[in-house]
Amino acid sequence: MANTNPKRLKCEYNKPGNISELCTYYLAFLAGMLTDPLFTAIATLLGDAKTQVQKLQSAEEKALTRVPGAAATRDTVLVATEIIMDKVLGKVQEAGDENMEQARIIFESHQLKVVDYGQHPRDTFEVKHGKVSKTFKVINKPVGKNAGYVWMISEDKKTWYLGDFGSAATGLIDSCNDQELVQGKLYYIKSRSNLKGVKSDWSQIMEKYCI
Picture 1 (tube, rainbow, N blue to C red):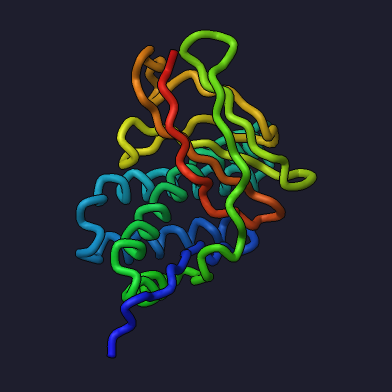
Picture 2: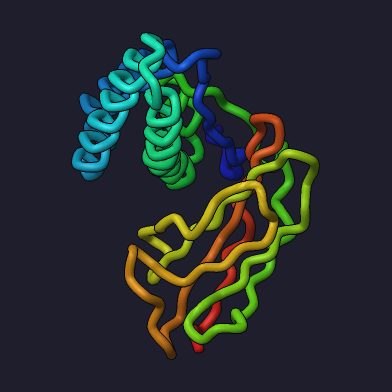
């Protein structure tokens, strides 16, 4: 008898220890995604991600030659690469959530690590109106020393945009999709933390009207 209540699973990258190997891993992963009919709808995102990883690969090769400023450039490119690759991973997670009985197969077929959802608890997270009009103040409960935090914002809970990221548990959101927030409009915001390389699950989605 089929399992009528399958356990929700979470996927994570099996990241290697250095950037050169990471680029090789990402490119192999994206190649597999591009040939999987399940992800045809995100072909543009996958193509953009591949281009970004190739930029990181070139930046790392230059950084290894110790050209002045190359390492700093590489680090900037790395941040942009991690952002887009997290978006790709989110799409794989969505595919697994939509078909939980096949989630393990979907994840493992793309060489992703599979963990039980909820292994790392959701963060305590809240959103307030900022002191300045058309801003939101996002507040995470600190999870530990040297933790990192990222917030995402959406207009429809389908397409998400980076709100802010860094080591501060509290931050300000003043835009969505590089556009100024609109007074009277409802926005959706979620958060996650990263402590010693372990990312929490996304927080509950908070709804807030812009004022």
